[in-house]
Image 1 (tube, rainbow, N blue to C red):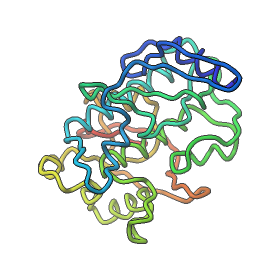
Image 2: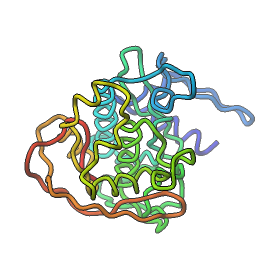
Image 3: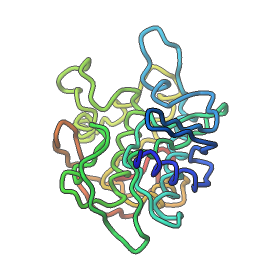
Length: 263
C-alpha cells in the first residue's frame, strides 16, 4: 500500500505531454487500482515485439518520434520537477501510445524521489532484468540508471527485438553484445530491423553510441541542436544476466543523429 500511494502521489503531481496523466485511483487492503488517461494504441512493446502472425508495426518516422517523446519525458523527470524523479523501470512495456502514436512514460511504482541538491541516492536492487543499470548492484545510484534503460529501449525499438532473445543465435543472444560486435565491424546498420524499405532508406541517421549523458543532452541530440562525437569506443560486460555499457561523459562534434543519443 505504501508503494502504491507513493506512485499516486508522484504521478498525480506531474504535468508533461510525455508523461501519462493520472485521472483517479482506488485503494483498499485487497485491491489497488490506478486510472490513467486512455491511450488507444496501448503499450509500445506490442508494436515492436510482434508475435507470429501479427501485422503491427511502426515506421521509421514514428519510431524516431517515440524515442524523442520518451527522452523529453525523462528529461522533465530528471531536471524540471520540484524534486528529481528516477523512474527505475523504463522499458517498452511502460511506454504508452495515444491515437496519434505520441509516446508517454508510465508506471511509477518503482520510482524514487531525490532532493534537487542530491546527486545520488541509496537504493535496493530493483527494476526489470535486462534494463537494470549495473551500478544498481552497488546501491548508490543517480538518474543515469534511467539513461541506461532508455538506451536499451532505443536498441529494442530500432531492432524490433528484445535485449535478450533466446530464439536468436548465440552470437546475437544479447542485443548489447551484438551492438558492440557490429560496431567493431563497422556494420551497425545490421542491428536495424531490416524488413521495411524506409529503414533501408535512412541508414545515414544511425550514429554510434557511447556513454551516458543527461537526458536533457539526449533531447538536444534528438532535436538536432547538439552533435555527438563520431569516433566512439564500445565497452560491455554482463551484470547478473543483463548486459551493460561503461560510464563516462559526452563530448560534441560532427553531425548529430535525430534518432539516438550517446550513452
